[in-house]
Amino acid sequence: MALLTILEYPDPRLHKVAKPVTVVDDRIRQLVTDMAETMYDAPGVGLAATQVDVHERVIVIDTSENKSELRVLINPEIVWASDDLKVWEEGCLSVPGYYDEVRRPSRVRVRALGLDGKPHEFDADGLLAVCVQHEMDHLLGKVFVDYLSPLKRNRVKARMQKAQRERGGRD
Image (cartoon, rainbow, N blue to C red):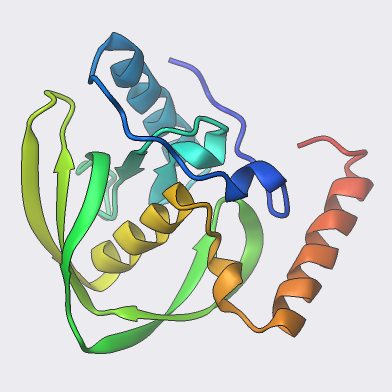
């Protein structure tokens, strides 16, 4: 197990579109293990492979209070989304310390492969629905600040760049 480095906005690698996983093998299982450890250590409730500079369609999520319900989504797709939208305040491990409101469908149905390589579907609402959509955006090269106005997005970008300079460019 290893902690992975989480890319921070506005790193251009966060805007790469992830490729589908062709086979769920030991390499993917190790990636999932490392991503889960990284997510829990951060601490966060979701992490997409894009955020750790692996551009394959892999997500880990755990929205449980006691961090005991890890969900692994390989090649996830939303097969249904509700028409009703809800505004949630979102944050992101790639945009540390910044939170803002994003409007998304309140419920979704997701199809994905599990660690066994077999497909499964589940319905999500509340925080899980938000988290799934947020992490799937990462796989499409989209960060939640992309939903904000250009003014807000530029402020976040400037703040993140300043913080990176103050750390001496370390990521």
